[in-house]
Image (cartoon, rainbow, N blue to C red; front, side, top):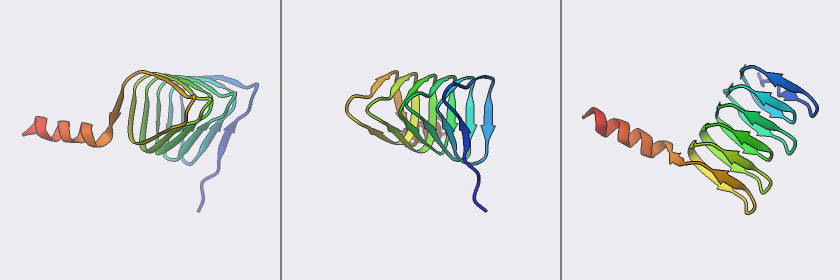
Length: 117
């Protein structure tokens, strides 16, 4: 069974955290954290002020907060990200802006494994 795509349209503003199974597209504004089992798309007019945790993400708009993506994070040429990112794979188009630190999940897993020994 395929999960529905949840959408917040342009002109809509939400305050509060969002948790969803499946994919999520944000063209409006969200002040709060997002936790998904699927893919997040922040559209060109989309804005997130909060932390993001998901499987995949395509950022076209703006995110102010930390991002943790288990698979692929794609930053479109119009993307603006202010915060730290933790990813498995990263794709950045020329023109995207990113301010923060970037760590690979494998690196963090290795550090955690060696710290326990």
